[in-house]
Amino acid sequence: MKTGSKPNLGELNFGESIDAESENKVLRATVSYLREEINKFKSRPLVVCDLKKMINERAMIRLPNGNYFLVEVANHLKKDLLPGDMVLVEQRSFTVIDKLNEKGKSFNVEDFVIIEKPNNSWEQIGGLKDQIRELREVVELPLKDPGLFKEIGIKPPKGILLYGPSGTGKTLLAKAVAASTNATFIEFVASELNQKFIGDGAKLVGEIFQLAKEKAPSIVFIDELDAIASQRIDIGTSGEREVQRTFMQLLAEIDGFNNLENVKIIAATNRADILDEAVLRPGRFDRLIEVGLPNQDERKEIFKIHSLEMNKDKIDLNLLAEKTDGLSGAEIYAICTEAGYFAIRDKRRKVNQGDFILALDKIKGVEEEDSGMFG
Ligand SMILES: Nc1ncnc2c1ncn2[C@@H]1O[C@H](COP(=O)(O)OP(=O)(O)OP(=O)(O)O)[C@@H](O)[C@H]1O
Ligand SMILES: [Mg+2]
Image 1: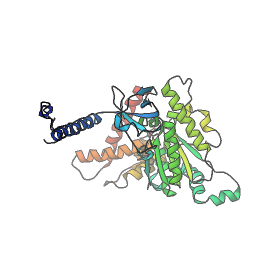
Image 2 (image 1 turned 135 degrees about the horizontal axis):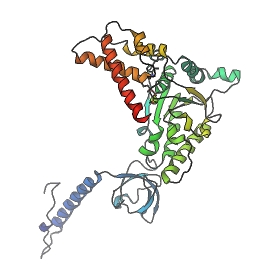
Image 3 (image 1 turned 60 degrees about the vertical axis):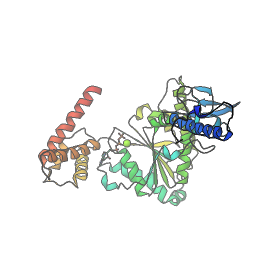
Image 4 (image 1 turned 45 degrees about the vertical axis):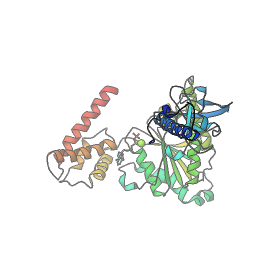
């Protein structure tokens, strides 16, 4: 009998002479067939849950939504499960049918963050001169020369908060300072903590900071900080309590650091106005750096940076800067790319001023539509 096909139980002859050997053979094929079937079931979407504890061979699990259930466990797993394991449960019965990691280790933190060694240079940033200077003083200098701070007797900030509208270069700044200090850049998006890591965002935060220490010098970059650190009026639902726990853990991790440890925390937000004051207290994110929209000179610089490698005719950067009041660096970048597309559509190998103007009108059009809808 070939594997994968359903064994024929009719081959079993329960009549006068049961041949133990052939019985054995068919049963074994049956078991192997059923195992394969189980494997197919495993390949369906399964819910990732936290195992809280085992109670008489049954498992108490916590679902992504925060609810607890006492559920059955597949036989082969019963002796294998430990509290804290991350398990896979079947969607309808919530039966635990597999677990994700080795004993006691419920997840791999590196699956939830981006770890890189950025190579963004300061020169690739247009404008933002004050912000760059400040970042170099409060992040770069202490990482490069902690002795200086000891000698003078001051404590550099541990946490820096970059705030301002979208697309103004906050992520860019954080990466550039990581590059200039040759630090490991560990990035995660706060709003994803409790979504991606359904179950226990607080635990993940702990692991992220542990990782940062192991990979020091390092910069932990927390994007969309407001998602976990905004003021909450009521924390009624389990989801909100979960976010609150994650937030408390974040504060505890920051408080646990020494100012001169070679881990720095940089957070970014578009909504500094809604942040919980606890996060801004001295010793936490106590250095706020505003990253605003570029002025005309800065816009010219950004156009220059992003068009530098473009094959182009002479372009009037002053005019472009003049016409882009209110746009961000990200939008200027988009205009440069779009200008390239206008040339391509026109079957040219060189981008000209007209392409930039068309691109500008297009991006500004999109911008106006957006602010018309939401603004
Ligand atoms: N000052 C700048 N100089 C050069 N390029 C810029 C600048 N600001 C933004 N850009 C361009 O826009 C892109 C997006 O910028 P960035 O991701 O740093 O914005 P952000 O402030 O982090 O936005 P968000 O709040 O949406 O995360 C950059 O990769 C870069 O191409
Ligand atoms: Mg960003």
